Picture: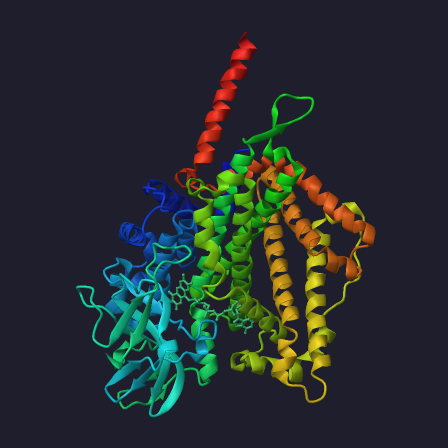
Length: 639
Ligand SMILES: Cc1cc2nc3c(=O)[nH]c(=O)nc-3n(C[C@H](O)[C@H](O)[C@H](O)COP(=O)(O)OP(=O)(O)OC[C@H]3O[C@@H](n4cnc5c(N)ncnc54)[C@H](O)[C@@H]3O)c2cc1C
């Protein structure tokens, strides 16, 4: 089977765009950045960013009215595809057009769009998204920077050192302007976190009066991005610089907002900014695909040890252990790809709609949080696996994996720390997207769960009995889906019961919730695994090419059964699989790995990572060796 026929299925709805971006990337000069100094790498990435600004990609996510492409999903797909290349470039592009540009577009109003969007798109105005502070990262609702309206201007101020903006991309070197998130104070009253356009550098690149800029310095990876710290000493910006889509301040200081509740307004604002989270999930997926392509191609040619009966050495991928390293990881990358595709589709539909459905928006936020967490953790794990699968060669920078590892490491933290994100998912599950969710902090959530919800959830969730357990049934998609659904329902019901039990008497709601955090995280995790399996199963179902469908069906089964195998203790302990059947799951995973082994190369080639980004020395050398071997075999056959 040609990889192209699978690529077509993977490319899905944005196929033309994916092809275009891949072709553009193939034309970009690839440089190994591992030996560059921080300054050289930053300069290179900024130059590449300017080249990118000349293409249509960065405009995709912006309104057509201002010269944009009006294609929200397309913009996410473009970021995802950029993830095949230097991840510093992807992150820098994400900061400029996704975070900074996205905040101006989604939180601002017409005057901001008219004034800034064209300059943001063509990079005349490089900018930052300054949300995180040294003291507050995950808990952005409690940022300390203030923006006080004094009757004429907003005065931006950093009250103490831990309130300085930290890790801010584009701040250390290139940014001219920052969208700064701060507590808005007017008429002596706090109105919660709002966003302000704040110029930080003059045309010569010097910090403006009242703005202090520090360089975060060298990082564990992504050194082409200039992360910095910003401190504001009573910096004045005009009233118009408030991005006022969700809250306006009149000249006389009166505050107005279409959303009364400060909490609800804050979470609505954050909800509009999830494009960045979805893009990070997608580009993490691309980095994993790149690593897998290197490792599988290498494993398909590299030989080590010979069979007793054969002088010829064995190809690594013929070892079962090597198949178990790489093929379940490959299957999971496929699964996450289709989940990401659904996420992008839903984001596109909701953010293109004049009146987005609130329930679907909550669901999208929950899926974005869960898939971002699972995808970035998968990437971190898979790159390590690929490094080991390439042995010592995998540890050489020229073979790409060490740079990939360093650059993707922090994906589990930025755009939402994964542990915090999975709690968000669980919160969504527990509240079932009830309107009260907006007003719940961690403490409030605990109280809410305890007081209002616990009784309901336990009654509503069905408890499915054990399914058919013969080995054949394991291959049945219906069984797999039911197993995942059943596990999710059971974990959630168990969590609710646990919270109820713990909450009896005068228990402290915070302690109740805190002591069940392991269970909370697990609920978020198994829910997302079910969403991912469902997405893969649906993609297999709608696949038009029967040959591709058969192959993807096996890959999907490998994902499902390997996930069950990883959580076998749960399935056994809860009577979902009889003890003896646990072995059948493991046996089925082995059998599927052996069955898919001949297709491994096709499956990674179908990811269509531009060859330019696969220029690893081990792949060149192995193909030279193959060539030499082939010539030798030909010569022997002829003589
Ligand atoms: C390279 C890089 C680029 C970045 N770019 C930007 C940018 O451009 N703009 C911007 O605004 N920010 C940026 N950030 C900041 C990033 O968004 C934050 O690092 C992230 O939100 C996490 O915050 P934190 O680092 O303060 O970690 P914390 O929130 O302090 O988390 C630390 C640890 O505590 C755990 N934890 C926290 N709360 C809980 C809880 N309730 N329950 C259980 N565990 C918990 C977390 O799981 C984590 O393990 C960047 C960061 C990096 C490293």
